[in-house]
Picture 1 (cartoon, each protein chain N blue to C red):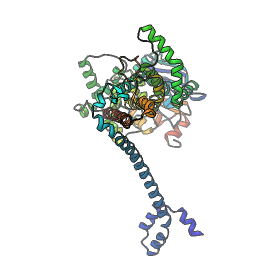
Picture 2 (cartoon, one colour):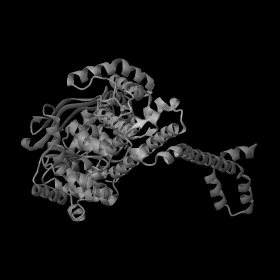
Picture 3 (cartoon, each protein chain N blue to C red):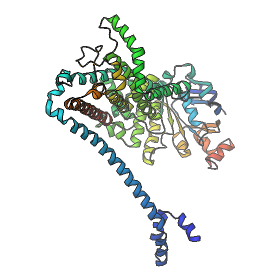
Picture 4 (cartoon, each protein chain N blue to C red):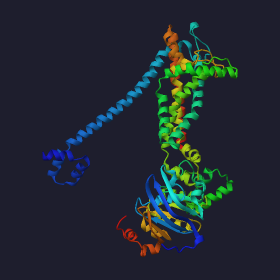
Length: 258
Length: 329
């Protein structure tokens, strides 16, 4: 795989990265450079290790009993596995498959939940600014500005997912990880969220796991294709979908297996 | 032969489909012949439903029956003593003076003190088993031990209390300079605290285990530590369940008789402090029921039972209200 990326624009860098569940080897020798302010899609069939790889980037993988990993994973040339996991997760936000706003918190409190959880005290005006700014970034402000004190669980599924993105954005991370962020959403909400990706990449680097090829093609600048735990191919999305170099990629995007 | 096989295979849904889809009369007749099995199903269903309803109603009748017995049997005492029975400070059956206040106080103080002592332990056990270490030999051992606490007969707690706890408490009382009796409200609260831990702990544990992992991951993903996840996600999410468990414990403490009777000192005077010997409503009934030689005496004891019953009901109702407020919030 050629590397056409300018060196200092790389945010996330993995070298020979492996992940395991017990003795089960689920991510095998992955080498990847994620460029700054781009959208990178990670696709592949179920069980190919794409979600596990994503969860290794912000060290969520190790929360599962028996899970372990080996290899190099760096953010801005700092080893993620030598940092405290809490700092890693503050720098690298995450949005999950199912919208998971905190049901006992209001919309407002959901957005600043990260600050509350970490015990960071903010002035009222500062909080208001963060909430408005974050909700505006995810195109939710106009829909919820009059009901900020309502519970987040009153929103529709798509709105809840955007609230979760706002919650991650509020912490001003460098990288945002998305684990199949639209698989629980209807088509209209899906396209709203997909539009957001284009907006968000001006400030953040986005890594999106998806099992939906069309989505990868629509939203990403670069695409990584995982198969059976290996990174088969990683390239510009256009090149990948028009002129894949590996047979397995070719078979996958033409729908010969899924 | 052929038909019986078909009969068995047919279900209610494809029966109706067939009736709808078949316009021909012959088909309809055929469908009618096959209704025998669905009828049998409906009959079983009805029998099942009726059994459930009868069981449910029986339960209600049973509780109402107990209440009615208590009311009827305590009528003589209610008539003779009036409402001042409740706040009467003296209990002297020899002179026919019956005041329930010392026992009401004894029950409430010992139960709430026990609850107060047990809450840190039961919540800690619930969090440990539900969130921190749900699997492994140590949590399993702890879980089984805690469950065993509930299974030990209360008379054994009474023995243990008399043999081990009371001397320790007596030493402690000596040191802090109160009258060293050993037996008393404090000792019975300690025993009760141990006895009621499993109720709050096991309900709390199952509640904590039900917290969706997506919520916990959301908090971890925002950089929360384990303690922050427990404090800000797990506990708020489970507070009504934890409270229900604590309420269950309180109900157990209010009614516990044997162990308390053995260590509380059985003195029918108003306790001066938590170290004084006293009596609870349950312990008085257990102690004096066989000695009650006069009709009013017996009736006064039964009225004590009625008061205990009502106190438990009222505390439960208040608790339900609080749980409702927690869950709707």
